[in-house]
Amino acid sequence: MVSRFHAVTPLITRLASRWYGRAVGILEAPEPLPSRPLSPEARHALGRALHNRGLREIRGRLRRQTAARMRALRESDDPTSLLIAWWDGQQPTELNGGTNIVQHALYGNSEYVRARIHYSPTEYMVHRTRLAEVVSSERNIQGLRRIELAERAGVTLAAVNRLERAEPFETLRVVWPILRVLDIQPSAVPAPGFYQEHGVTPVPAAILAQGTGLLYPASSVIKPWPPRSGKAED
Image (cartoon, rainbow, N blue to C red):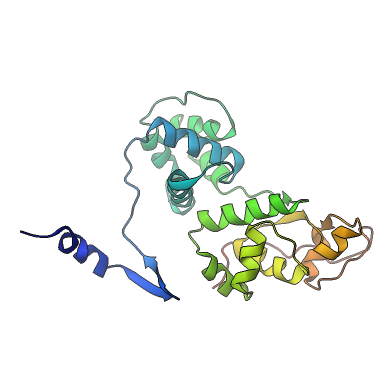
């Protein structure tokens, strides 16, 4: 008789992984998203995620699954076919910006679907809670652990943790590299803790782009945000 452990061992041994302290992170895994119809709950969550361009108010297991589906849509050469399969060729039962993309998929407007899936507007993040929400959401969609984000951004894990918990930060130097790695383009971010206490908020994105951690008048002539590079470099 084969035990449950031995039955799954061959799958585990084929996964590329890396140790992070006492935890093991999976680097490569088989495609986890079969193109079968989603449950009504999963469709609702994915529709809201497409509408919000993030995982706002989606929690737990459903959040992880929705993040994986958002990532699959971005990486797919044919996101239209994925949406048609996930909705089983049926019209959405609710209307919002996300389900509008699904409708275009059903009508065969592949170019529109692809453009909307990859559309990434500037983020107006004037409060720490909004900054935390955007960073956490995009990190999950990109499939990064916090320690991986910290390593790529060249900041400490503690800095990432504080940012995602919406705790005060003392310098913009920890914010800039995190946003660059996640390819988040802000129009404004919260001022560091010291300046918030003195009523200075938010910080224009052009100031953040300098990465100096210093504040300048919003009317100053400052170099613009660097051009988007597509995918973040490791």
